[in-house]
Amino acid sequence: MFDDEYFMRLALNEAEKAKEEGEIPIGCVIVCNDIVIAKAHNQVQTLNDVTAHAEMQAFTAAANYFGSKYLKDCTLYVTLEPCAMCAGAAAWTQIPKIVYGTQDETHIQIDRRKLLHPKTTLKGGVLEKDCKQLLTTFFAEKRKNK
Amino acid sequence: MFDDEYFMRLALNEAEKAKEEGEIPIGCVIVCNDIVIAKAHNQVQTLNDVTAHAEMQAFTAAANYFGSKYLKDCTLYVTLEPCAMCAGAAAWTQIPKIVYGTQDETHIQIDRRKLLHPKTTLKGGVLEKDCKQLLTTFFAEKRKNK
Image (cartoon, rainbow over all chains, first blue to last red; front, side, top):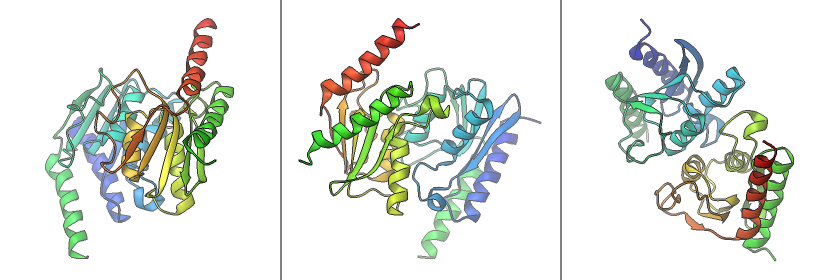
């Protein structure tokens, strides 16, 4: 039951919350031994803060949960491939695994840019279609309402 | 009076605060039209949070000051060349100028990694000796007390 798709679905739930708030729909969860220890969604517009990406908030929440800034036995599930800022933050946490839904086609892939910790494994394409559709629908509606 | 060295000295004051708190001594200020609108120092240990770099806190504070997440007429003065996370955040803010003190010799330079916004200019080496010495003294003392 607790496979990558299960946790990505929880990340998608978070992305839906972002959408309801008028935010670009990106969500994530951080999981440790099959327990969700942090969940967050993009709040850049709501908080008026470019650093309020889902992953950044989840890293802070997970560190609070553990009382440790290193997330050594955790996996990050995020609907969109992390940006350079979030990949850089992930490297500092030393999180061993990142699973993302759909690729960020506007940037060079983060693994090719060597932004992650050398021990972090990256897996993409989990529930890719759902993660991508949420984003494309959001942007299509944005353009229509302009 | 209000030149790069003047503002880097303020960033150095912030770095000194970090040192007093047992943090790696890195500090920064964000300046707009010669007015300091945000200042911050590294608080990673204190807050137990890898995202609590000086720059990240200053970006959030500056956005709060303006009520806008874009820092279009600002300059970031930071004692150490920003890491990938902070450079990525800087790119999202679209800040047009970053001035740093000393280079981060543990990583490839951020401008060579294309992490900044294309319109952002980067200047290094302002009060380099002072910024570097603060860090080397800190790490030397750390090693001595081990």
